[in-house]
Length: 459
Image 1: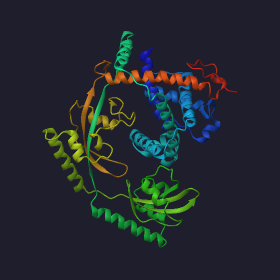
Image 2: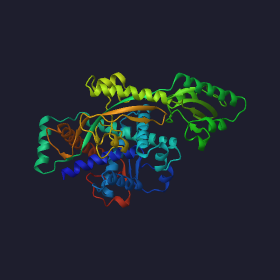
Image 3: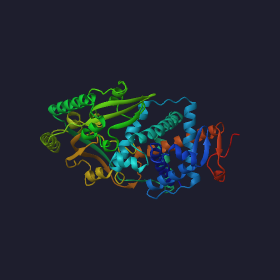
Image 4: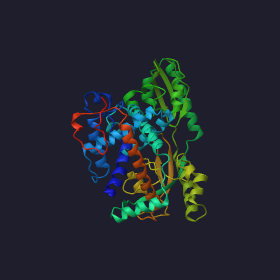
């Protein structure tokens, strides 16, 4: 049924994104003992990929979608076929694109699990760098797939008449999709910055530690006593071996790769605070380093002043003296949202809307009682980088759960119609590429009934 198909494709697409950002990735050791379900070109799908992917689909759809092993395998083969031909077509992926995706994924996982440490533990990695390394690998493939699919469908479009015909067809069959309750949110954020005297205190302390270590003191002991890095208790400040591809912030890598063995850097600033780095050993293209991180303290006086400032802004908003967009442009200090009117982007879908029942609990608690046009209470927040801030959220738009309507949901129906047309083009491309691509199914899956001719094997 078309209604089932719409919902299935949407949810599978979401889960594919999660899979390819690391939720169900496997490490190299598992590959050796895991069964290979299929080879597509130079890519493989493991038996465990199928099972884990099925589980993600069912969990993310809250049990509304059940999918067989054969259906799941066909979805995975489609992705691997795209990845294979992206390489053949010389699709390029830059390191900055990968790093951006990795950072976004880590932020999402941290939000879902409450901390980086919990996210790392949930997916069985040793530390955050191991997780980032694996995320980088799978995100590169994810970007290849996305770019290849975009290349195939870039000239596809739908006319208003095609949208109307598409909607009418669903309506006549009683297959109009249910549109969930959704919200669009904007935020304004003021950050409480540390006093200059506090930053100078931190710099002087780091210079003092540097001098003491150069005179024979233990860097590890100094890190344990002084560092604000939450992992220091386990590693004594040792970050292991990093490369230029490792997902560390730019400032950290630039300093680490400028040092000679045994050298300690001058204090420098990153988004996390102030550091000194000790280069233990040069290991090929990598650097084994330790660091000490110190984050300037923010006084209660500064926090109170920041809160008073945002209270004045909120008062002006409520009195109509300024619009929310104007206030964001004039006052907001959130780098991610200040240039788009404060609009909060959903980290799960990368869209400007949130399904009301599928949003981070902390965010839901702040906006659940709001109606369109309402302001939230002022809230306090802080980041893992040590930033402290006050914010307020504006409910830009809110829709209730309802059956799709052509006028109210025209943009959504346009997306559905366009997705269907692109799917048809992708199906045509897939049928052609299957014939020229090496495919080998394991015996366990040769009994499957597929929509496309995946059973064709190149010998």
